[in-house]
Amino acid sequence: MTLDSPKEIYIDNAATTSMSKEVLDEMIPYFSENYGNPSSLYSIAQVARDAVDESRENVAKILNCKPSEIIFTSGGTESDNMAIIGVAKALIDTGNHLITTKIEHHAVIHAMEELESTGFEVSYLNVDKDGFINLEELESKINSNTSLVSIMLANNETGSIQNLSKISEIVRNKSKSFQKEIYIHTDAVQAAGKLDLDVSELGVDLMSLSGHKIKGPKGVGCLYIKRGIPITPIILGGGQERQRRSGTENVPGIVGFSKALNLANEEKNNFNVHCKKLTEELKLKLKNLKYEHTIITPNENALSNILNVCFKGFEGEPILIGLDMAGIFASSGSACSSASLEPSHVLVSMGIDPKLAIGSIRFSFSYENTSEEVEFLINSLESVLSELSILAQT
Ligand SMILES: Cc1ncc(COP(=O)(O)O)c(C=O)c1O
Image (cartoon, rainbow, N blue to C red):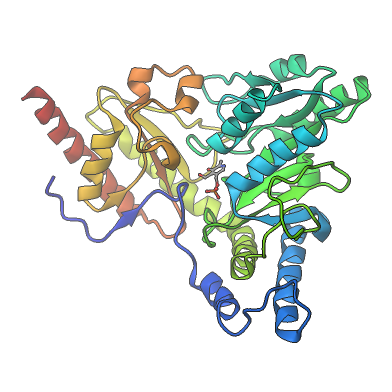
C-alpha cells in the first residue's frame, strides 16, 4: 500500500482521544509541587484535598447531582464493575435478578457473567437491527427479584443511543408495582461530550464515565451513585471516597478528568455539529465506493461522531493494516477486542451476518478531524480494498 499520507489521521476517538493541552496544564502542578496525599492533615495535602473537592463539585454540577454522589474511579471499567457488582451484592437479600443488554461493553457483560457464576440470574435484552432494545421486552423481563437494570446510554461500536428516560420510566413503574427498589445504571462512557448527562433528566441511579474518551487522562473516571443507594465496595483498603472506593486518590487524574469533562460539556454542541458534518460527508462519499458495504450506525438516535461500516467479502484487520500504512488509524469492532477475529458481539446481536460483521470498521471522529481527511480516507479505502481484492485473487 503506497499512498502517501499528508500526516497521521486519527479516526479512532471512540477508542481513546489525545489529551488536550488545557487539561494537561491543569494536571501538571499536582504531579510536582502539589503532590500531597489528600488524606494527610498538613497544608500541601490540603491543597490536594481542595483540588479533589473542587473537581467533585464541578463534575456534580455537570451531572446535576450532589458532590457527595460522585465517586472517582480508575475509569469506565471500574465504574461499571462497581455499579453492577456493588449494587447486586448489596441487594442480594432483596433479589438476585439483573437485566442488561446484549450490546454492552465487556466491562458490563463480564461483570454480569461473574455474578452469574455466583448464583445471580441475568437477562440479556435483545436489540433490533439498528441496535435498539425493545421496551416491551424490558418491561416483560422485570420481576420481583430484579434489583438492577444496566443499559448503556450510547454504544461504543455503532453509536446507537438508547432512550434512557423512557427506560427509567418503565423501570420506575415496575418498581412501584412490585413495591421494591429496582435501580438503573447506565454506562455513559461514550456519551460524555456528545449528550446531556443530567442524571435526573435521564432518570438513572448510577452512571459511569471515563476521562480518556473526552480528551482527558487515561485511568480515571467516575461513578455517580444516587444518595441512599446501597453499594458494597469492590476495592477495599483505607476507606477513601467515603468508604466506597479505597486507594489514595489519583489527584492529577481527577483534576484532569474534571477539566476535560467541563471542556467537553461546553464544547458539546460545536463538537456535534462538526462531527455530524464529517460522518455525513463520509456516508455520501461511501455511496460512490466501488466495493459493497453496509452502514451499521443507525441514521437516527446515534452519536454524531461514530460511523460503523461493514465491507462485504473483507476482513476488518487487513483493511486496518492497509489504512495504517496510509497513515490512517481506525478500529475494527471495539478497541478492546481488536486483537481477535471474532465478529463483534454487538453486531451479531443486531442480527448482522457474522461473515459481514468481520468486515466491520469503526470510524470515530473528533473536533480535530477535517473534510480533507475524510477525502483522503475515502481515497485510501478505495486503494486498500482494491489491493486486498487483487491479493485475494492471486
Ligand atoms: C462504552 C464503554 N464502556 C466502558 C469502557 C471502558 O472504559 P475505560 O477504558 O475507561 O476502562 C469503554 C472503553 O472503551 C467504553 O467504550
